[in-house]
Image (cartoon, rainbow, N blue to C red; front, side, top):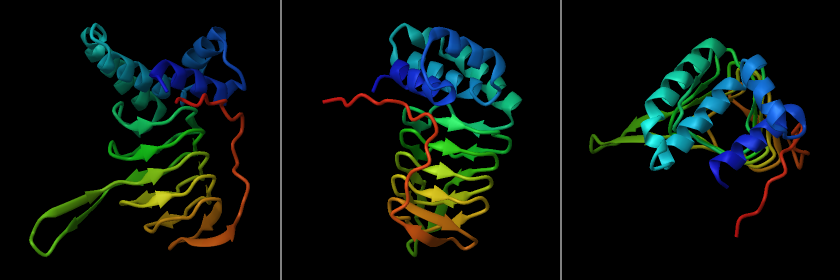
Length: 196
């Protein structure tokens, strides 16, 4: 999916539709939406031959947007279409994390890297993978090379260091699976076109 289509999907998640007017309203009045827009603009600029001239400006805009929103989200992070950030204060996403489509993240969520020093002295760095339609509650922490399965819901305050199977509800520190076979919680899911 092209980055412009991802931005359309991000807008859909916030407003339940896409219109250019909605995109502009989101940029002007939604503190947690602006960093998503500036992230997408940086990605568009970095992948375009002529856009690279504008990449420094886009990076500055992204830095300002993230600071004003109180979040840490690198512009180079691999984020699928339909990202929704709710409240956002204190959200931290390591640049190596991968986030799927129609993911919802609340304030205080941390997607962090884990470094392990092997017996031979080499450093092994791992980042989380968040699959499609995952809901991450307030102050949920996901650390290291773990995968959060599609459609799972991570309760507020959960601390996750192990893989979570799809469609699970997880809570606690350390995290435990309290339910399997759950329904995903995706408000205004963006319609995603299948690319062949």
